[in-house]
Image (cartoon, one colour):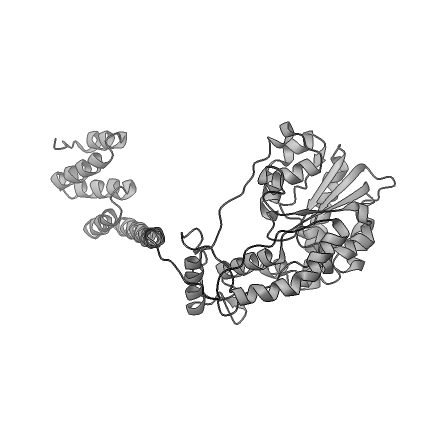
Length: 419
């Protein structure tokens, strides 16, 4: 740690989430604009969008953070080495920065113990004169639905095992109040009507003092990542047939990049009986926010029944069909690439006739495949099949009338294309 006798910065903003409150959008927006923000006196670390390393550095047992295991860091030594590298990078950048405000953001801060919070506070106060905690919260019922949706789409759960957990303000916020002081803790409702411009990015920017002109440099990366009931049913079917993990390892029979997001259909929710249970369980959290911060969260409407019935309208069916086609088309293009590579190997072995068949196969699978077309024409001319070579080029020209390479290859081999 670089010793600092007098805090260098006026303040430190510590955004602690919570998860599923636009945290990723906020982090991406500020990280993308960090160079501009630096010119305005705001420091957002270069280490990454999410400052997990800082939460890890002051966590009693950082192995609890799944982020480390995902990258193969399963021992305390490996995690400590990573954290130290990141801290050294951070402190070097902080020492070189001239400004007034430092911003850290991670939803991994809240799970730490009160002692962890104290260690983090003591460290931050070596850099900044004051610390402001910012936390966005949503109604626990809405939060539980969002968490369940996230777990489903990521393949961590199925519909018969929904992840019904929610962020509990009364369990998390008191330790921050005790460690940092109540006046240092700002709690905001993650509700469109309550946020500036309906955006957590704009709301946070205004909260830390960015003007409208300065906010214009922030790109709000919000995306429509909703999971419909139909998408949830498909995700459930996918995970039941091909679990994400088998014996603690990624299932090789499951595609690594597959999503059921943005499939049109009925809005996803949890069964009414489940949500009624959450409503009862979360009442102490609702009361805590009202009594301690004067914050009233709007209770979402509950579904009419426990049945999650899909609508399977035409938009849903068209979306699924389009995704299936895109997947098969990608496979087809990969097969075309494989045929092209096989043809190139045969050509190197001086087997032009066999190479021609592979190039034809590649073109048949992907008709605008210029690397395969050019090699096919070359070997057709080499084996005195110029008429077929001309026909192949003509077919390609008809699909790509502005392709200048067609004229060049015609001149090279003396080909006359049919009108």
